[in-house]
Image (cartoon, rainbow, N blue to C red; front, side, top):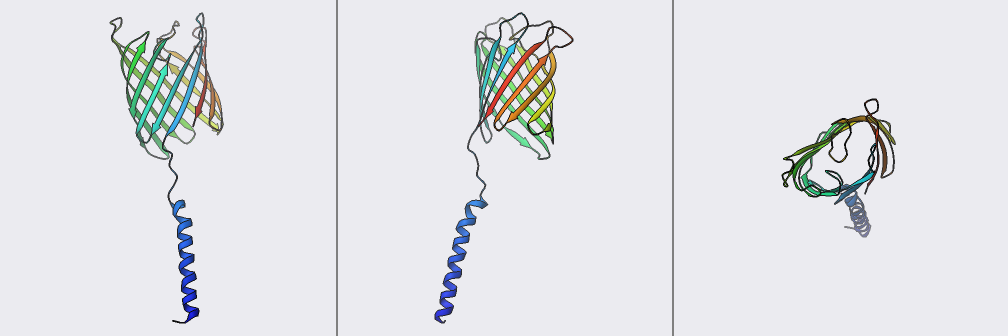
Length: 211
């Protein structure tokens, strides 16, 4: 092999190695180890003191961890562990069955589920649970928050929502209403108005952060 041929082979090998080094990291998509979210709901119910209900969640692949306060009852906390299940792309289903412990003004164990079904700009979601109290005052309590949202544009969402809770009381066992919200980057702000036309409205102001 002539010196010219050897030099050509050397440069081709070097170029191939450089391209392999550059392409390697791009071929492997970056994966986030953990995803976190913090959501705080501020409740303004008629004839009752307002209160805040924060929830913090952490997700790592299939693992879901969550902590809540003033969610099952006032001055009550809860911790949860669950399993994330996902299916579909255009019609995307996400289901997270969970088990939790409730402590504070109410004590007990709980079983719950968070689920959502998304198709393009429409999402149907529900968060529900059953709390089995250990103090014997009540055997169990069912809590639910279903909602249907539509996002006509990326930063805007509107829809319908309902809620069944024991934290505050109105003339209705199930609160029914509508929602209006906006998002900016990782922040989301949503206003819920319940019971308009049935009784004095309850307003919930929600702020969410994902990171």
